[in-house]
Length: 118
Image (tube, rainbow, N blue to C red):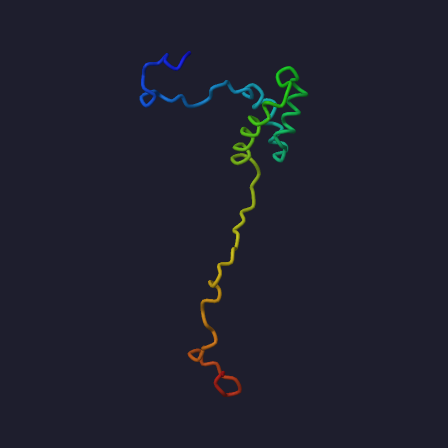
């Protein structure tokens, strides 16, 4: 199909979104991979790929599916994986902690041996 096959201007054409290729993991996700992930959620995509290659050598002869598998495992782990610790980073801000001047605290009325604190 040449560039002049569609006479519609590019600004008026509809952009095709979504998958351009059928999902290669569709047949194997529920039966082969999901039970493994549910048993051990720390399994890496490469380990799952090696399992697929040993169970279905003709369907997965090479590692081209690895990236697709990583993309499939990441959302599963976020939604169904183990709970993760939440960390609130404490970053010091220059000048924030030393804003108050405690050298002049006369209004506190601190007395040492009956004398006002110097």
